[in-house]
Image (tube, rainbow, N blue to C red):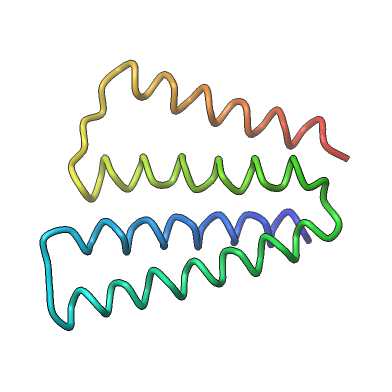
Length: 108
């Protein structure tokens, strides 16, 4: 169950960075609405990470939480914000995914 909580924490981290990306080049109420989404996502992400870390090894939980956020942010960047998907970037993205899977497999 705590692995699911940790995964959800990572998804909220992705939501946080998505909201941050949407603030680029905007102002007024729309800016503040995206900042509100950023703050809500950040709070939920941290809360869920703290909950998961109560039973999972802290180093593993933190690394996987960060990794989920990093992978998700790169994918959002490519598909939503039209960032480049160069072969070397994709290689390192898959290397990160393999590392996350490896951490999960060796954690008790």
